[in-house]
Image 1: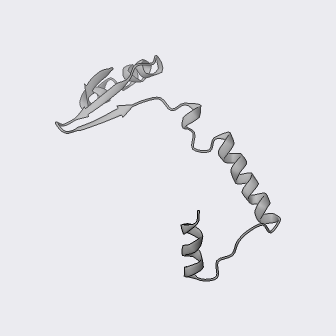
Image 2: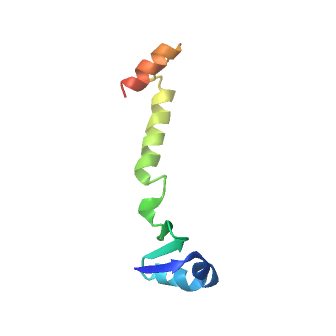
Length: 84
């Protein structure tokens, strides 16, 4: 694991990105009390994974088939979220 200052990271950004691509972990130190971990984004990090896309499509289908619940006031909405 490498620990570098934010200034050094800015100056040698391409070099450190190459190290990240090679599997190196990098911590960027900013001042005395702040630090940030830099890691490459992988397929597992994508917000809309295949499973999430399937859940969204299934939900749309349920709505189209009328398999929904309707809240007509704030109390019903509170109860709905309470029971999730």
